[in-house]
Length: 509
Image 1 (cartoon, rainbow, N blue to C red):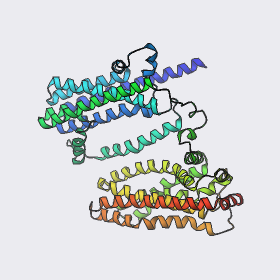
Image 2: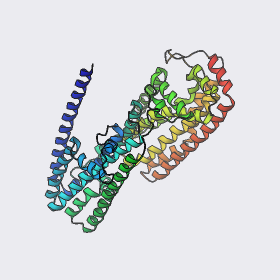
Image 3: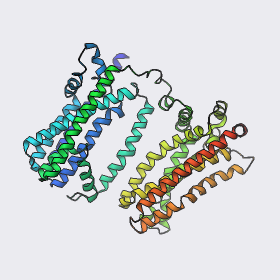
Image 4: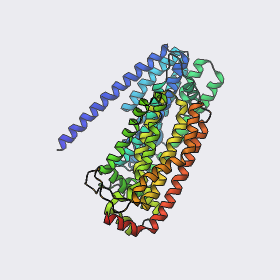
């Protein structure tokens, strides 16, 4: 068994090394092709790529949970001076496979900068500073992960980090992929590049390109920002090393026990316990799974009747995202009924209503936010109208958050019978009262009603291009947050006063 595990690890290591070598070669070839590109295009790609690389080295170890072989605490027993430890570990970090890949890419970058007109001493200096900044950023990421996060990363925590990456990276990739470059830099990307160039993320790469462009004032500013960035990273790394060597280890073993899953990831309070229990239900109970799988399908299917009715594709393509946001907010309107007899745990333990209401909204939020984050940029790329990004976010947030607010109220005031655990999701029991039957319609209509101002502003934005962009975004966000908070408060108070009534309900349906 031990030999099989070692063999599997060896295979994974070899495969990972091959993938890294192939990716490095591809990046080097793409980078060298910029030598013949116009300076604005090369400047955009290099600055944005450098900023993404620095962020990747900083947050990559935190997201992946990579074990740090150069953890300063490993060398504390050798009696090394704390003052010498930071730079010794930083130099040692250069002797690694990722560092070799980074050095190879930086060498290609130096060649490109020289071809673009940057003097060779400046090109070499830029690449050296870039390598040092990235390596120290990776050290900082490793140390931060060791201080703040569990040493044995659970699948649930890794899934949360992956969702964050999807929410951020996927829309950005769609945005850049939808642009028409035609040998020139789009105005939006050019403005973004100019802004990032004067930040710590892009200042080092921007310094060499401003020299090539002959902009002395910009080169001076980027040089100062790049130098301060490297100094700040070194100071941060030095403080982390001292912190790791002079502080006691975190008591992580008591929190990260096997088998706890989401209960070990979320906070150790009533809200965290209910959120973890709800996540377990939502991810394993097919009644929940069917609900949130149908929502994206239902949103996409709304396009076809509109096209048959003669609605232009540009308008019909804008409908699925608001529909999905509305249905996602509507889904928890009967969440208490799905608990069945498990509700007694909440009532018997004296959980406050607000904790119950907020905890139940965590699963649908973790599903809805990534789906909407992917659907919105796909829609805007299809209709080629990126000016609708803020209005679309405002409208989706308004419908989603408003639906959650009203669902928090209706799920405790008007629950109705549903299929029991293990039964078919499409099986509905007979109901002895009709009051609960109004809950779905009330939640649906109320969420649309409070979103009418945002819907009107969104329509005006589409008609008048971008005149109502900020208003649509802020009105939608404000409306959704207010309705959500008020709904949770009201639903929490109803829950506090009606726990016995809810227990009677789940016992009789």
